[in-house]
Length: 289
Length: 289
Image 1 (cartoon, rainbow over the protein chains, first blue to last red):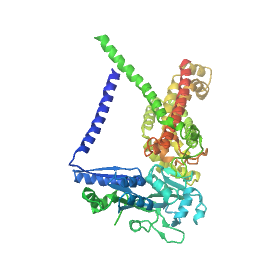
Image 2: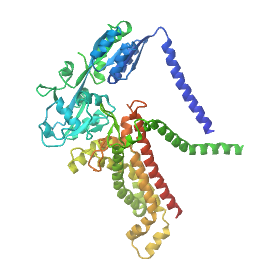
Image 3: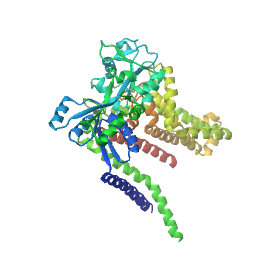
Image 4: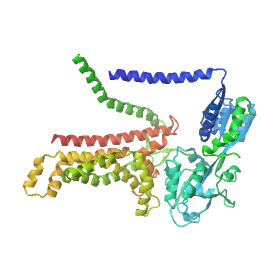
Protein backbone atom coordinates (compact mmCIF):
# COMPACT_ATOMS: atom_id res chain seq x y z
CA UNK A 1 0.00 0.00 0.00
CA UNK A 2 2.60 2.46 1.13
CA UNK A 3 4.88 1.24 -1.60
CA UNK A 4 2.16 2.06 -4.09
CA UNK A 5 1.66 5.51 -2.63
CA UNK A 6 5.41 6.00 -2.75
CA UNK A 7 5.55 4.95 -6.38
CA UNK A 8 2.65 7.24 -7.26
CA UNK A 9 4.29 10.14 -5.45
CA UNK A 10 7.61 9.52 -7.11
CA UNK A 11 6.13 9.25 -10.59
CA UNK A 12 4.17 12.45 -10.02
CA UNK A 13 7.39 14.20 -9.07
CA UNK A 14 9.21 12.89 -12.14
CA UNK A 15 6.29 13.76 -14.37
CA UNK A 16 6.19 17.33 -13.09
CA UNK A 17 9.94 17.65 -13.60
CA UNK A 18 9.59 16.42 -17.18
CA UNK A 19 6.74 18.82 -17.73
CA UNK A 20 8.85 21.73 -16.58
CA UNK A 21 11.69 20.61 -18.84
CA UNK A 22 9.33 20.28 -21.81
CA UNK A 23 7.71 23.64 -21.29
CA UNK A 24 11.17 25.21 -21.24
CA UNK A 25 12.25 23.69 -24.53
CA UNK A 26 8.83 24.54 -25.94
CA UNK A 27 9.42 28.17 -25.09
CA UNK A 28 12.85 28.09 -26.70
CA UNK A 29 11.36 26.94 -29.98
CA UNK A 30 9.02 29.89 -30.37
CA UNK A 31 10.29 31.98 -33.23
CA UNK A 32 9.07 35.39 -32.08
CA UNK A 33 11.26 35.34 -28.97
CA UNK A 34 14.63 37.06 -29.11
CA UNK A 35 17.42 35.39 -27.18
CA UNK A 36 20.45 36.73 -25.48
CA UNK A 37 22.95 34.31 -24.00
CA UNK A 38 25.31 35.50 -21.30
CA UNK A 39 28.25 33.38 -20.15
CA UNK A 40 31.38 33.80 -18.07
CA UNK A 41 32.56 35.05 -14.69
CA UNK A 42 31.06 33.36 -11.64
CA UNK A 43 31.46 36.62 -9.72
CA UNK A 44 29.09 38.34 -12.11
CA UNK A 45 26.50 35.60 -12.51
CA UNK A 46 24.43 36.92 -9.63
CA UNK A 47 24.60 40.50 -10.90
CA UNK A 48 23.90 39.50 -14.52
CA UNK A 49 20.89 37.43 -13.37
CA UNK A 50 19.54 40.44 -11.52
CA UNK A 51 19.85 42.57 -14.63
CA UNK A 52 18.31 39.85 -16.78
CA UNK A 53 15.35 39.36 -14.44
CA UNK A 54 14.44 43.02 -14.34
CA UNK A 55 14.97 43.39 -18.09
CA UNK A 56 12.87 40.33 -18.94
CA UNK A 57 10.05 41.62 -16.75
CA UNK A 58 9.89 44.70 -18.96
CA UNK A 59 10.50 42.95 -22.29
CA UNK A 60 8.37 39.83 -22.46
CA UNK A 61 9.67 39.01 -25.95
CA UNK A 62 13.27 38.66 -24.84
CA UNK A 63 14.69 35.53 -23.25
CA UNK A 64 18.04 35.85 -21.49
CA UNK A 65 20.00 32.88 -20.23
CA UNK A 66 22.88 33.42 -17.83
CA UNK A 67 25.53 30.79 -17.11
CA UNK A 68 28.79 30.88 -15.17
CA UNK A 69 31.93 28.83 -15.60
CA UNK A 70 34.53 31.57 -15.17
CA UNK A 71 35.77 34.50 -17.24
CA UNK A 72 38.03 32.26 -19.34
CA UNK A 73 35.13 30.00 -20.26
CA UNK A 74 33.08 33.05 -21.20
CA UNK A 75 35.75 34.46 -23.50
CA UNK A 76 36.25 31.06 -25.14
CA UNK A 77 32.48 30.93 -25.76
CA UNK A 78 32.59 34.41 -27.31
CA UNK A 79 35.41 33.35 -29.66
CA UNK A 80 33.46 30.23 -30.65
CA UNK A 81 30.37 32.31 -31.25
CA UNK A 82 28.31 30.39 -28.70
CA UNK A 83 27.45 33.39 -26.54
CA UNK A 84 26.19 36.89 -27.30
CA UNK A 85 27.65 38.51 -24.22
CA UNK A 86 30.65 37.34 -22.27
CA UNK A 87 30.79 38.49 -18.66
CA UNK A 88 34.35 38.82 -17.41
CA UNK A 89 35.90 40.00 -14.16
CA UNK A 90 39.24 40.58 -15.96
CA UNK A 91 40.44 42.17 -19.19
CA UNK A 92 40.81 40.03 -22.28
CA UNK A 93 44.39 38.74 -22.61
CA UNK A 94 46.60 39.62 -25.61
CA UNK A 95 46.70 35.95 -26.56
CA UNK A 96 42.93 35.70 -26.55
CA UNK A 97 42.71 38.88 -28.60
CA UNK A 98 45.02 37.53 -31.34
CA UNK A 99 43.04 34.29 -31.32
CA UNK A 100 39.90 36.39 -31.83
CA UNK A 101 41.40 38.18 -34.86
CA UNK A 102 42.25 34.79 -36.35
CA UNK A 103 38.64 33.73 -35.99
CA UNK A 104 37.36 37.00 -37.42
CA UNK A 105 35.88 38.20 -34.16
CA UNK A 106 36.39 41.70 -32.82
CA UNK A 107 35.93 41.68 -29.03
CA UNK A 108 34.20 44.86 -27.91
CA UNK A 109 34.83 45.78 -24.28
CA UNK A 110 32.07 47.41 -22.20
CA UNK A 111 32.83 48.22 -18.56
CA UNK A 112 29.60 47.63 -16.62
CA UNK A 113 30.52 48.00 -12.97
CA UNK A 114 33.32 47.56 -10.47
CA UNK A 115 33.94 45.27 -7.54
CA UNK A 116 35.94 46.61 -4.56
CA UNK A 117 37.16 44.60 -1.57
CA UNK A 118 37.82 46.49 1.67
CA UNK A 119 40.39 45.20 4.16
CA UNK A 120 38.97 45.77 7.65
CA UNK A 121 40.35 45.76 11.21
CA UNK A 122 38.99 46.57 14.66
CA UNK A 123 38.58 50.34 15.26
CA UNK A 124 40.95 50.07 18.26
CA UNK A 125 43.76 48.85 16.03
CA UNK A 126 46.11 51.80 15.40
CA UNK A 127 47.22 50.54 12.00
CA UNK A 128 45.56 52.66 9.33
CA UNK A 129 47.17 51.48 6.14
CA UNK A 130 48.98 48.47 4.70
CA UNK A 131 50.52 47.67 1.35
CA UNK A 132 49.06 44.91 -0.76
CA UNK A 133 52.28 42.94 -0.23
CA UNK A 134 51.95 43.23 3.57
CA UNK A 135 48.33 42.09 3.49
CA UNK A 136 49.34 39.14 1.32
CA UNK A 137 52.09 38.16 3.75
CA UNK A 138 49.61 38.26 6.64
CA UNK A 139 47.19 35.98 4.80
CA UNK A 140 49.79 33.40 3.72
CA UNK A 141 51.04 33.27 7.32
CA UNK A 142 54.46 34.91 6.79
CA UNK A 143 53.55 37.74 9.19
CA UNK A 144 51.96 36.47 12.41
CA UNK A 145 52.33 39.51 14.67
CA UNK A 146 51.15 43.08 14.21
CA UNK A 147 54.76 44.01 15.04
CA UNK A 148 55.72 42.78 11.56
CA UNK A 149 53.69 45.62 10.01
CA UNK A 150 54.59 48.33 12.53
CA UNK A 151 52.01 47.64 15.23
CA UNK A 152 52.22 46.23 18.77
CA UNK A 153 53.45 42.68 19.47
CA UNK A 154 50.04 41.01 19.29
CA UNK A 155 49.10 37.94 17.25
CA UNK A 156 47.18 38.59 14.04
CA UNK A 157 43.82 36.84 13.88
CA UNK A 158 43.20 36.16 10.19
CA UNK A 159 39.58 36.10 9.03
CA UNK A 160 38.61 35.04 5.54
CA UNK A 161 35.49 34.12 3.63
CA UNK A 162 34.75 30.44 3.06
CA UNK A 163 36.63 28.77 0.22
CA UNK A 164 33.39 28.54 -1.77
CA UNK A 165 33.30 32.33 -2.09
CA UNK A 166 34.46 34.00 -5.30
CA UNK A 167 36.00 36.73 -3.17
CA UNK A 168 38.20 34.11 -1.48
CA UNK A 169 39.74 33.26 -4.83
CA UNK A 170 39.98 36.85 -6.06
CA UNK A 171 41.75 37.86 -2.86
CA UNK A 172 44.12 34.91 -3.21
CA UNK A 173 44.90 35.94 -6.77
CA UNK A 174 45.14 39.71 -6.36
CA UNK A 175 46.66 40.07 -2.88
CA UNK A 176 48.34 36.76 -2.03
CA UNK A 177 50.13 36.15 -5.38
CA UNK A 178 48.14 32.90 -5.78
CA UNK A 179 49.74 31.33 -2.68
CA UNK A 180 47.69 29.20 -0.27
CA UNK A 181 45.93 30.69 2.74
CA UNK A 182 47.62 30.19 6.13
CA UNK A 183 46.15 27.23 8.00
CA UNK A 184 45.52 29.62 10.89
CA UNK A 185 43.08 31.58 8.72
CA UNK A 186 39.58 31.33 10.13
CA UNK A 187 36.96 30.81 7.44
CA UNK A 188 33.76 32.62 8.28
CA UNK A 189 30.44 31.52 6.85
CA UNK A 190 29.33 35.03 5.90
CA UNK A 191 30.40 38.62 5.53
CA UNK A 192 28.30 39.59 8.53
CA UNK A 193 30.13 36.99 10.66
CA UNK A 194 33.44 38.60 9.64
CA UNK A 195 32.19 42.06 10.61
CA UNK A 196 30.81 40.73 13.90
CA UNK A 197 34.14 39.07 14.79
CA UNK A 198 36.24 42.05 13.75
CA UNK A 199 34.15 44.32 15.93
CA UNK A 200 34.86 42.03 18.92
CA UNK A 201 38.45 40.93 18.35
CA UNK A 202 40.92 43.79 18.67
CA UNK A 203 43.67 42.07 16.68
CA UNK A 204 41.67 40.56 13.84
CA UNK A 205 41.92 41.41 10.14
CA UNK A 206 39.40 40.51 7.45
CA UNK A 207 38.10 41.46 4.03
CA UNK A 208 34.57 42.31 2.94
CA UNK A 209 32.83 43.76 -0.10
CA UNK A 210 32.97 47.57 -0.11
CA UNK A 211 29.20 47.89 0.32
CA UNK A 212 29.27 45.81 3.52
CA UNK A 213 32.28 47.68 4.88
CA UNK A 214 30.52 51.04 4.45
CA UNK A 215 27.30 49.66 5.93
CA UNK A 216 29.12 48.40 9.05
CA UNK A 217 29.90 52.03 9.96
CA UNK A 218 32.19 52.38 12.98
CA UNK A 219 32.00 48.69 13.96
CA UNK A 220 35.04 48.15 11.77
CA UNK A 221 37.81 50.28 10.29
CA UNK A 222 38.56 50.04 6.57
CA UNK A 223 42.30 50.19 5.92
CA UNK A 224 43.94 52.39 3.33
CA UNK A 225 45.73 50.21 0.80
CA UNK A 226 49.09 51.00 -0.80
CA UNK A 227 49.54 49.41 -4.21
CA UNK A 228 53.26 49.14 -3.50
CA UNK A 229 55.55 50.25 -0.69
CA UNK A 230 56.22 53.76 -2.11
CA UNK A 231 52.77 54.68 -3.35
CA UNK A 232 50.31 56.57 -1.14
CA UNK A 233 47.59 54.73 0.75
CA UNK A 234 44.18 54.93 -0.87
CA UNK A 235 41.12 54.38 1.28
CA UNK A 236 38.36 52.33 -0.28
CA UNK A 237 35.29 54.27 -1.39
CA UNK A 238 32.87 54.28 -4.28
CA UNK A 239 34.96 57.08 -5.83
CA UNK A 240 38.37 55.41 -5.46
CA UNK A 241 37.03 52.11 -6.75
CA UNK A 242 35.42 53.93 -9.69
CA UNK A 243 38.62 55.69 -10.80
CA UNK A 244 40.65 52.48 -10.27
CA UNK A 245 43.09 54.12 -7.82
CA UNK A 246 42.10 51.66 -5.06
CA UNK A 247 44.18 48.52 -5.54
CA UNK A 248 41.98 45.62 -4.47
CA UNK A 249 39.25 46.13 -7.02
CA UNK A 250 38.45 44.93 -10.46
CA UNK A 251 36.25 46.14 -13.28
CA UNK A 252 33.46 43.84 -14.35
CA UNK A 253 33.16 43.71 -18.15
CA UNK A 254 30.83 42.71 -20.90
CA UNK A 255 32.53 41.51 -24.08
CA UNK A 256 30.53 41.36 -27.31
CA UNK A 257 31.50 40.55 -30.88
CA UNK A 258 31.75 44.00 -32.45
CA UNK A 259 29.37 46.80 -31.51
CA UNK A 260 26.20 45.10 -30.25
CA UNK A 261 22.93 45.52 -32.13
CA UNK A 262 19.30 44.51 -31.78
CA UNK A 263 18.18 43.01 -28.49
CA UNK A 264 21.74 42.77 -27.18
CA UNK A 265 22.29 46.49 -27.77
CA UNK A 266 19.08 47.32 -25.94
CA UNK A 267 20.10 45.10 -23.01
CA UNK A 268 23.57 46.71 -22.80
CA UNK A 269 21.96 50.16 -22.81
CA UNK A 270 19.68 49.03 -19.99
CA UNK A 271 22.67 47.81 -17.96
CA UNK A 272 24.45 51.15 -18.41
CA UNK A 273 21.29 53.17 -17.67
CA UNK A 274 20.60 54.64 -14.23
CA UNK A 275 18.22 51.77 -13.55
CA UNK A 276 20.80 49.14 -14.45
CA UNK A 277 23.44 50.86 -12.35
CA UNK A 278 21.04 51.02 -9.40
CA UNK A 279 20.88 47.22 -9.58
CA UNK A 280 24.68 47.21 -9.40
CA UNK A 281 24.63 49.12 -6.09
CA UNK A 282 21.88 46.88 -4.79
CA UNK A 283 23.90 43.74 -5.55
CA UNK A 284 26.82 45.15 -3.52
CA UNK A 285 29.07 46.34 -6.37
CA UNK A 286 30.18 49.79 -7.49
CA UNK A 287 28.46 51.56 -10.42
CA UNK A 288 30.66 52.61 -13.29
CA UNK A 289 30.02 56.35 -13.03
CA UNK B 1 -14.14 -6.74 6.09
CA UNK B 2 -12.42 -6.64 9.40
CA UNK B 3 -9.45 -8.75 8.28
CA UNK B 4 -9.10 -6.62 5.17
CA UNK B 5 -8.95 -3.47 7.24
CA UNK B 6 -6.49 -5.09 9.62
CA UNK B 7 -4.23 -5.98 6.75
CA UNK B 8 -4.24 -2.45 5.35
CA UNK B 9 -3.45 -0.91 8.68
CA UNK B 10 -0.79 -3.54 9.34
CA UNK B 11 0.86 -2.80 5.99
CA UNK B 12 0.80 0.94 6.61
CA UNK B 13 2.37 0.51 10.03
CA UNK B 14 5.09 -1.90 8.87
CA UNK B 15 5.73 0.34 5.88
CA UNK B 16 6.19 3.49 7.96
CA UNK B 17 8.33 1.62 10.50
CA UNK B 18 10.69 0.32 7.83
CA UNK B 19 10.94 3.58 5.86
CA UNK B 20 13.89 4.62 7.99
CA UNK B 21 15.78 1.40 7.16
CA UNK B 22 15.14 2.00 3.49
CA UNK B 23 16.31 5.61 3.75
CA UNK B 24 19.47 4.70 5.66
CA UNK B 25 20.37 2.16 3.00
CA UNK B 26 19.69 4.72 0.27
CA UNK B 27 21.92 7.26 1.99
CA UNK B 28 24.77 4.76 2.32
CA UNK B 29 24.39 3.81 -1.32
CA UNK B 30 24.28 7.43 -2.48
CA UNK B 31 27.30 8.50 -0.43
CA UNK B 32 29.29 5.52 -1.68
CA UNK B 33 28.34 6.15 -5.29
CA UNK B 34 29.42 9.80 -5.23
CA UNK B 35 32.58 9.20 -3.20
CA UNK B 36 33.92 6.11 -4.93
CA UNK B 37 35.69 7.69 -7.97
CA UNK B 38 38.06 9.41 -5.52
CA UNK B 39 39.80 6.06 -4.84
CA UNK B 40 41.17 5.81 -8.38
CA UNK B 41 41.97 9.46 -8.88
CA UNK B 42 43.57 11.12 -6.90
CA UNK B 43 43.78 8.07 -4.63
CA UNK B 44 42.51 6.96 -1.26
CA UNK B 45 45.75 7.81 0.56
CA UNK B 46 45.10 11.48 -0.30
CA UNK B 47 42.40 11.48 2.38
CA UNK B 48 45.02 10.92 5.08
CA UNK B 49 46.95 14.09 4.32
CA UNK B 50 47.59 16.49 7.16
CA UNK B 51 46.13 19.55 5.42
CA UNK B 52 42.71 20.42 4.02
CA UNK B 53 43.21 22.89 1.16
CA UNK B 54 40.24 22.43 -1.16
CA UNK B 55 40.81 25.61 -3.18
CA UNK B 56 44.32 26.40 -4.38
CA UNK B 57 46.19 27.75 -7.37
CA UNK B 58 49.03 25.31 -6.63
CA UNK B 59 47.83 21.94 -5.39
CA UNK B 60 44.53 21.01 -3.84
CA UNK B 61 44.89 18.80 -0.76
CA UNK B 62 42.00 16.84 0.70
CA UNK B 63 43.37 15.50 3.98
CA UNK B 64 40.55 14.63 6.36
CA UNK B 65 42.78 14.41 9.45
CA UNK B 66 42.39 18.08 10.54
CA UNK B 67 38.61 17.80 10.13
CA UNK B 68 38.40 14.56 12.10
CA UNK B 69 40.57 15.88 14.94
CA UNK B 70 38.43 19.04 14.93
CA UNK B 71 35.21 17.07 15.30
CA UNK B 72 36.72 14.73 17.93
CA UNK B 73 38.08 17.63 19.99
CA UNK B 74 34.77 19.51 20.03
CA UNK B 75 32.80 16.32 20.77
CA UNK B 76 35.06 15.26 23.66
CA UNK B 77 34.99 18.72 25.22
CA UNK B 78 31.21 18.89 24.91
CA UNK B 79 30.88 15.43 26.46
CA UNK B 80 33.06 16.38 29.42
CA UNK B 81 30.92 19.48 29.91
CA UNK B 82 27.55 17.79 29.55
CA UNK B 83 28.19 14.86 31.94
CA UNK B 84 28.09 16.79 35.24
CA UNK B 85 25.15 18.98 34.21
CA UNK B 86 23.18 16.20 32.58
CA UNK B 87 23.73 13.48 35.18
CA UNK B 88 23.50 15.62 38.31
CA UNK B 89 20.44 17.33 36.85
CA UNK B 90 18.80 13.97 36.22
CA UNK B 91 19.61 12.76 39.75
CA UNK B 92 18.07 15.87 41.23
CA UNK B 93 14.93 15.67 39.15
CA UNK B 94 14.44 11.94 39.66
CA UNK B 95 15.39 11.57 43.32
CA UNK B 96 15.35 14.83 45.20
CA UNK B 97 13.02 17.32 43.54
CA UNK B 98 9.49 17.63 44.88
CA UNK B 99 6.56 17.20 42.52
CA UNK B 100 6.18 20.95 42.13
CA UNK B 101 9.86 21.50 41.39
CA UNK B 102 9.78 18.74 38.82
CA UNK B 103 6.72 20.12 37.05
CA UNK B 104 8.54 23.46 36.90
CA UNK B 105 11.94 22.14 35.73
CA UNK B 106 10.85 19.64 33.10
CA UNK B 107 9.14 22.08 30.69
CA UNK B 108 12.20 24.33 30.74
CA UNK B 109 14.48 21.43 29.86
CA UNK B 110 12.18 20.59 26.99
CA UNK B 111 12.21 24.20 25.79
CA UNK B 112 16.02 24.11 25.79
CA UNK B 113 15.89 20.99 23.63
CA UNK B 114 13.63 22.77 21.17
CA UNK B 115 15.71 25.89 20.49
CA UNK B 116 16.88 25.87 16.86
CA UNK B 117 20.64 25.41 16.57
CA UNK B 118 21.07 28.51 14.43
CA UNK B 119 19.63 30.59 17.29
CA UNK B 120 22.03 28.97 19.74
CA UNK B 121 24.84 29.59 17.25
CA UNK B 122 23.94 33.25 16.97
CA UNK B 123 23.86 33.52 20.75
CA UNK B 124 27.32 31.89 20.78
CA UNK B 125 28.73 34.29 18.22
CA UNK B 126 27.40 37.48 19.76
CA UNK B 127 27.30 36.72 23.51
CA UNK B 128 29.39 33.69 24.42
CA UNK B 129 32.48 34.16 22.24
CA UNK B 130 33.36 37.64 23.64
CA UNK B 131 32.94 36.24 27.17
CA UNK B 132 35.25 33.29 26.43
CA UNK B 133 37.72 35.67 24.85
CA UNK B 134 37.80 37.93 27.92
CA UNK B 135 37.85 35.17 30.56
CA UNK B 136 40.76 33.29 29.02
CA UNK B 137 42.54 36.33 27.59
CA UNK B 138 42.47 35.01 24.02
CA UNK B 139 42.90 36.98 20.81
CA UNK B 140 39.61 35.60 19.50
CA UNK B 141 36.58 33.92 21.04
CA UNK B 142 36.00 31.65 18.06
CA UNK B 143 37.45 28.47 19.54
CA UNK B 144 36.75 24.77 20.03
CA UNK B 145 35.66 25.37 23.63
CA UNK B 146 33.05 27.96 22.55
CA UNK B 147 31.54 25.40 20.18
CA UNK B 148 31.73 22.68 22.85
CA UNK B 149 29.83 24.79 25.39
CA UNK B 150 27.02 25.43 22.91
CA UNK B 151 26.87 21.77 21.93
CA UNK B 152 26.80 20.68 25.58
CA UNK B 153 23.91 23.08 26.07
CA UNK B 154 22.05 21.41 23.22
CA UNK B 155 22.81 17.86 24.38
CA UNK B 156 22.06 18.30 28.10
CA UNK B 157 18.26 17.91 27.68
CA UNK B 158 18.78 14.53 25.97
CA UNK B 159 21.14 13.38 28.71
CA UNK B 160 18.78 14.52 31.48
CA UNK B 161 15.67 12.93 29.99
CA UNK B 162 17.23 9.54 29.26
CA UNK B 163 19.23 9.37 32.54
CA UNK B 164 16.15 10.33 34.51
CA UNK B 165 14.24 7.44 32.97
CA UNK B 166 17.11 5.12 33.88
CA UNK B 167 17.23 6.34 37.48
CA UNK B 168 13.48 6.10 37.90
CA UNK B 169 13.39 2.55 36.65
CA UNK B 170 15.73 1.38 39.40
CA UNK B 171 13.47 -0.92 41.51
CA UNK B 172 12.09 0.81 44.62
CA UNK B 173 13.19 -2.18 46.72
CA UNK B 174 16.87 -1.17 46.25
CA UNK B 175 16.15 2.26 47.67
CA UNK B 176 14.08 0.92 50.57
CA UNK B 177 16.63 -1.77 51.42
CA UNK B 178 19.45 0.76 51.45
CA UNK B 179 17.55 3.16 53.69
CA UNK B 180 16.45 0.31 55.96
CA UNK B 181 20.08 -0.70 56.43
CA UNK B 182 20.81 2.77 57.78
CA UNK B 183 22.33 4.46 54.75
CA UNK B 184 21.40 8.13 54.47
CA UNK B 185 19.83 9.62 51.37
CA UNK B 186 23.08 10.77 49.75
CA UNK B 187 24.71 7.39 50.29
CA UNK B 188 21.66 5.67 48.82
CA UNK B 189 21.75 7.86 45.72
CA UNK B 190 25.44 7.63 44.96
CA UNK B 191 26.22 4.09 46.13
CA UNK B 192 23.01 2.26 45.20
CA UNK B 193 20.80 4.12 42.73
CA UNK B 194 23.42 5.63 40.41
CA UNK B 195 25.47 2.40 40.06
CA UNK B 196 22.26 0.49 39.35
CA UNK B 197 21.23 3.03 36.69
CA UNK B 198 24.75 3.43 35.29
CA UNK B 199 24.23 1.57 32.00
CA UNK B 200 21.24 3.79 31.25
CA UNK B 201 23.21 6.89 32.17
CA UNK B 202 26.08 5.83 29.90
CA UNK B 203 23.63 5.23 27.08
CA UNK B 204 22.21 8.73 27.68
CA UNK B 205 25.68 10.22 27.40
CA UNK B 206 26.34 8.30 24.19
CA UNK B 207 23.07 9.57 22.70
CA UNK B 208 24.10 13.09 23.69
CA UNK B 209 27.44 12.55 21.93
CA UNK B 210 25.63 11.40 18.82
CA UNK B 211 23.69 14.67 18.83
CA UNK B 212 26.89 16.66 19.37
CA UNK B 213 28.99 15.15 16.61
CA UNK B 214 26.30 15.64 14.00
CA UNK B 215 25.44 19.22 14.94
CA UNK B 216 26.39 21.70 12.23
CA UNK B 217 25.06 25.22 12.36
CA UNK B 218 26.21 26.23 15.84
CA UNK B 219 29.77 24.96 15.32
CA UNK B 220 29.97 26.52 11.87
CA UNK B 221 29.20 29.87 13.44
CA UNK B 222 31.50 29.81 16.47
CA UNK B 223 34.50 27.51 16.04
CA UNK B 224 36.36 29.74 13.55
CA UNK B 225 36.72 26.95 10.96
CA UNK B 226 40.51 26.99 10.61
CA UNK B 227 41.45 23.55 9.29
CA UNK B 228 44.45 22.68 11.41
CA UNK B 229 45.38 19.76 13.63
CA UNK B 230 45.18 20.84 17.26
CA UNK B 231 44.10 19.48 20.62
CA UNK B 232 44.11 22.86 22.31
CA UNK B 233 40.56 23.76 23.41
CA UNK B 234 41.40 27.44 22.93
CA UNK B 235 42.34 27.03 19.29
CA UNK B 236 40.07 27.38 16.29
CA UNK B 237 38.97 24.10 14.68
CA UNK B 238 37.05 23.05 11.59
CA UNK B 239 34.59 20.23 12.13
CA UNK B 240 33.48 17.70 9.54
CA UNK B 241 29.88 18.88 9.60
CA UNK B 242 30.84 22.54 9.18
CA UNK B 243 33.08 21.65 6.23
CA UNK B 244 30.31 19.88 4.40
CA UNK B 245 27.80 22.65 5.10
CA UNK B 246 30.15 25.46 4.08
CA UNK B 247 31.65 23.92 0.96
CA UNK B 248 28.97 21.76 -0.60
CA UNK B 249 26.98 24.71 -1.89
CA UNK B 250 29.51 25.99 -4.41
CA UNK B 251 31.58 22.94 -5.24
CA UNK B 252 31.77 21.84 -8.89
CA UNK B 253 29.65 18.73 -9.40
CA UNK B 254 31.77 15.58 -9.74
CA UNK B 255 35.08 17.32 -8.96
CA UNK B 256 37.69 15.88 -6.57
CA UNK B 257 36.56 18.40 -4.00
CA UNK B 258 32.97 17.20 -4.37
CA UNK B 259 34.01 13.57 -3.91
CA UNK B 260 36.20 14.44 -0.92
CA UNK B 261 33.20 16.09 0.75
CA UNK B 262 31.28 12.83 0.35
CA UNK B 263 34.16 11.05 2.03
CA UNK B 264 33.81 13.46 4.93
CA UNK B 265 30.15 12.46 5.06
CA UNK B 266 31.00 8.75 5.04
CA UNK B 267 33.50 9.11 7.89
CA UNK B 268 30.97 11.14 9.86
CA UNK B 269 28.29 8.52 9.30
CA UNK B 270 30.64 5.75 10.45
CA UNK B 271 31.48 7.68 13.61
CA UNK B 272 27.86 8.37 14.55
CA UNK B 273 26.94 4.82 13.61
CA UNK B 274 29.43 3.37 16.09
CA UNK B 275 28.46 5.75 18.87
CA UNK B 276 24.80 4.78 18.40
CA UNK B 277 25.71 1.10 18.22
CA UNK B 278 27.58 1.26 21.53
CA UNK B 279 24.69 3.15 23.12
CA UNK B 280 22.25 0.49 21.90
CA UNK B 281 24.41 -2.32 23.27
CA UNK B 282 24.72 -0.67 26.66
CA UNK B 283 20.96 -0.07 26.78
CA UNK B 284 20.26 -3.68 25.84
CA UNK B 285 22.48 -4.93 28.64
CA UNK B 286 20.67 -2.58 31.00
CA UNK B 287 17.23 -3.82 30.01
CA UNK B 288 18.23 -7.44 30.62
CA UNK B 289 18.94 -6.87 34.28
